[in-house]
Structures are given as C-alpha cells and as structure tokens.
Image (cartoon, one colour):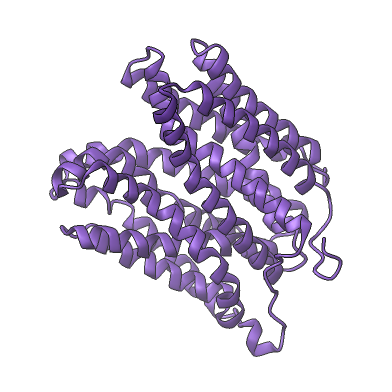
Length: 388
C-alpha cells in the first residue's frame, strides 16, 4: 500500500461532506436571497440524503460494468459539474446542482469502501477507514465554519461560498485519473457481478447499524442547537457545543484503531459505543444543564459507531465486488433512515411542544443500535447461499 494511494483516498474523503455541511450555515442567506420558504429550505437540506438512498443501490452494478476507479473518476467529474451548477444564480440550478453533486457523492460513499477492500491489506482496513472518516469529518467541520464568512467576503455572496470546495474536487479527480489505467471492469474479465445481499441477515444487521448511527448523527446536527437553546443556552454557545460534539467524534474515531488493534470481533465495541450514544441522549432528557457531558458522550459513541459502520462494509465482504454491493445496500437503507430521523423528531416536537418524547425516542433507538451493532460486529462475512 503506497503513500500515494492513502493521499488519493483522503482526497476523495475531503469531498464526501464538504459540499453539504456548509449549506446549513448558509441556509438563512439562501432563503432570503432566493425567496425560498422554510419548507423549501428544509427540502434543500434533506434532498442529499434522499438522493443518497435512491442512488446507492445502483453503484455496484455500474462498478461491475465500468470498473471502480473509472467510475470514481466519472463521479468526481460529475461532482465538479454539480458544484458549479448549484452556484449559478437560479433556484432551478440550486436544486438541480444539489441532486447532481449528491448523486456523485453517493457513488463516492459506496466506491470508497470497495476500493479500500481491494487495495488495502485486511489488517489495515480499520485504520484507513478511521483515517478517511477523520479527514471527512474535519473538512466537514471546516466547511460549516468558513462558509458564512466566505459569503460575506467573496464576490457572488452565498453562490460563490457554495462552490468553495471545487479545488478539492479537481485535486481528487487528478489524483485518481492515472489509476484508471490498470482498472479493468469485472464484466470484461468474466467475473460474475456480486448481487445486493438483500436476503442476508448479516447484511441487514450491517445496514441497520449504518442507518441508526446515521440517524443519530444527522438528528444531532439538525436539532442539538435547538434543544440546547430551548433549555436556556444562547445560540452562540449552542453552536460551539455542536462544534465540540463533532470534535470529540473526530478524536474518538481516529483513536479507535489504536484501542482495538488486532481485534477482529467488534461486537462489544459496537454495542458499547451505541449505549454511550443512548446515554448522551438520556443526559439531555434528565439533566439538560449537563450539556457538556451529553455532547461528550454523543461524540465519543458517535465517532466510534461511524468508523465501525463504514469498516463493516469492507470487512464483512469477501471481495471488492461484494463490498460495493454491501456498501450500496447499507448506505441506501442508512441514508433513508437518516433522512426520516430529523423530520420525525421535528414532528414529535411540534406535536408535544417538548423535547422530552423526541429524546426518549432517540434513547430507545440507541439501544436498538446496540443490538444491531452487536450482530454486525461478529467476525464473519456475508454468505449469499447460507442466508448469512
């Protein structure tokens, strides 16, 4: 495994969140500048998750036909196009560009675990997964922080700020372009395409773990500031707590390979981290004044769960083709669940006028995530014929 490959993987990771996380910060300006209502603004932030869910199952088939590296290069090209289209001063372009770049990111989300499974030694898969999750999270946090200041300083306001990450897209495209040469499509070599393992219990356990940890993350990102403000925090303090939560998650995810080195069975790690997430939501219910403790628990558990959820998509597959099929299934289900989470939590809050019931629901889902993580963490691989 070369340093160049690691850099190329990290450059893809940079682009998997950068174009998305800054939208929330810019949303008030986008609504004001384009005349969108709050409902349409909410759709704009949910649209990427729905696109992920719809696009992810298509990646394995396309990868088998065209080759993983070639498809990734095409996806990065589409990401560049989508980023430019989204920044054009037009509401139609805003939504069209969002769909294009979200579909491209969905391809990257699924292809990266498959490429890691093919190119990285088995004992280093978790370490590389943790590295790219750390890079992905760090740049996502940076995007959240600098998008608004850029909109105030760059010509073109928020339109230009939406496209600030285009340089990273071009860098990743150039890094992967030479890797297309040795990438032969499986279809041309007579290798049978790996089907999506819909009938495998293990695949469903990996998918549900992916879905529930995604739901916890996206719900926290969407509603944590509102919950803290409801309990007396200022908006500035709530924003810093959200940053602190993401910082702890990054630290936990990056340290995971050091703490679990040599372990192939991740059952108790996944279950324990899920319980820690449930504990963080429980603290918000029972003692909202202890927001630092709650965010610490959410970050510790959430960072570990994210790395494990992505690692399982590589480790539980027997080949790069199976990894693409499993990742497509896990991310399709995962992002569909994640898209529903913030919406349902908002409905529960509007119905009850309180955050108690929504947070209790998240505690219950955290316990369910522990069960899914325990099953998905077993040291075994998806077996199509055995239903495993």
